[in-house]
Length: 436
Image 1 (cartoon, rainbow, N blue to C red):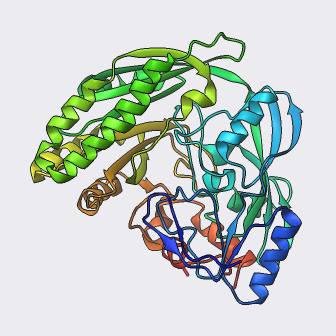
Image 2 (image 1 turned 90 degrees about the horizontal axis):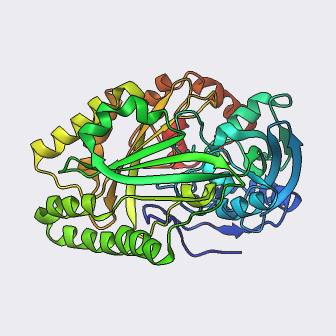
């Protein structure tokens, strides 16, 4: 099948592939990969298109795994279950299916429209100082290699390929299935309230100790919105946000009015500091209890560009202070809040939290504004504190300067060189961040 143009959600990348394929199962996927390789076409798989980078771009064969969806097997364990899921499954679909089995993912990001394969392959994470990202929850994978061979990987079988495939940027093969360690279903008590950046940073040690904590800082102000999510048993009664209040706060304020503010700020940048001051005070405190995945994820209807860096937790106050000083010193206007989250250290080779407890600093810009000056300044600040860029979000790093940031970088590249010496799964972006 031919496809005119593919575009990602942010409209930062597009592709005009020679072929667009939608395999329905692992065998069909392997056949498509083998035929494309034989025809000399490079191959990339695209999930929901929520990466801001060119990780999925190709002029050869573009794969959609949307037909490869759903749970394959559930194997009970002492702590929950190991669940094997087809790689094209959307996270929001998986969450519903897991709940029907009395299970949940231990942690999630705040967007749930990605495919399972896309989310783990680019290092999607949530927040919670005691919890790692999605890739660290993966305990086995099924990978289709460039020659069409199907390889079952785990820590005990093809361990190096397993490590490379569970956060692999699509560079070592195409994921067909992923097996994830799941926990018993749980609910979250969400407490959201406005506060000050100064007060939040002063109390940070205690706040980060909560199950799941994050905050949003509105540049040009000292205002923040804090979110504390506490884990509760799955049998806890639900206390959801009222329908009317949820519509007003999540749709009207967080998306509708916020989106209008972005258009207004684009037309009149001088108004942005005042608009941010209004935004930082617009949401009132609220507490509610719901299924874990319903609390973790939030609707995002305002299109934006994003860069996110993972830094040592201790460096967070300095980094945010430097961003504030840059904004004030240059007269730049920033209309989106800065999102700050936390994660536990893990051992995934290319994880941004590899070997260290991590604070994540995400900066955004409305899609109609020029993000480059702001992002360049923030990137320089983050590099100064040994920051690692999120693999699915905008940055300008290259293999040469990424290699020192990842102790297992060379091992990952060695696996890539072994299983894809002809670079069937390469593209210009991967040549930049991993080397040709």
